[in-house]
Image (tube, rainbow, N blue to C red; front, side):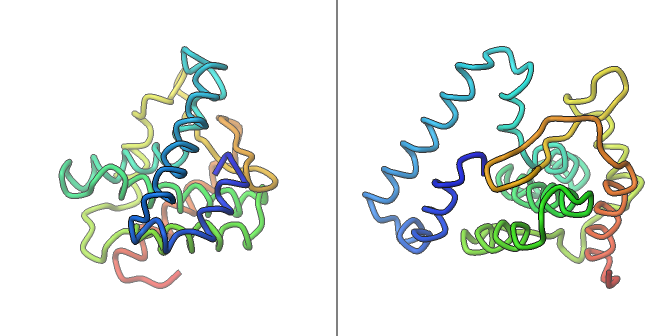
Length: 181
């Protein structure tokens, strides 16, 4: 998501990626590696911008842990976490709903989940507790990677609306319990 042109390329080429078109896969892998290398070279010790590679991970780790490791593939949990981060970013007012829709659409087109299953063992309290012990907690403060502004911009911050996070978790957990938003 940090590379807007690559995100747009994926939107245009998802069918080729899913069909395992060799040229599309080569390009996607090359561009992904270039993006990661650019971030890592600027932040070798994960003190700032490198953390943005973890978009969706704090929510995703709570899903993995709370559901039992092995229930979800890591990428599936991170996909749901990315959907949650996008939803929360919009709830705060940092991105618009059109971008949230694009993120959901590309995840769904890639055959990745964007919500917890109806039989998930998660509840809001458990979810928030699991998030509170994530490795990105510093000095007792949870820090998240969220989207801010236009496509391609993310921030690593502990300065966010706690109510927006709780509302986002509540909505996702309520969906898996079969309760409408």
